[in-house]
Image (cartoon, rainbow, N blue to C red; front, side):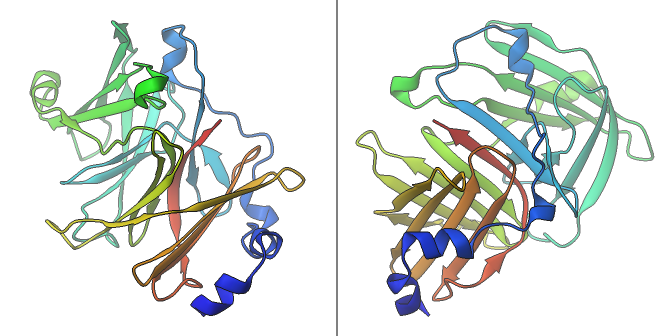
Length: 264
């Protein structure tokens, strides 16, 4: 199968990985708390969550060591909903509804407090950094998330969500998380973290290839190295992504729950 992928033309790959029409939301627009801090944005960050039928704009995803959280609603919405699970049990996903406070912004940061509305009375504090330094690869917002019995306790437990400089794609799947970044020289790197493998290093692939179909509006990243093969096809103008790959199984489709895409 790997030999088959090696023979496929870029056009064939784009056709093969085009997501179904039902998974694309042509009117999707992304909003961010960063609008509270006017700042030049050389790159456009887009976040989406798959609701089972369509890709819809979302706030952000936090890929942490202790839990993975996806915030379904766009930033600024008072009624927030979080999908969370622990990496050791990715199939046990829970939804929690929150009442969000008004953002407290200053010094290129915004902080929001989320208070549980149901049985789970946990309080979460989200800190969103809007620091931008393109030369150093600060192309996307950085997030810290804390959980506790009160706002003070949650704020004292802030931990960093996984972040990489020069990010192009970050995807949360049911099997793990995948990140595609650029080097200073423009090379492409893929890091794949597998759930249930705590303490292990991610699979890191270099020498990726990028192809863009302006007619289809699809940007495709292909990696093949160390017995692994991945192809990530993301829509540039509308919502939609498809990822296939793994160890010796480049045709294996991965179920994507949410993703971030940075359009240049």
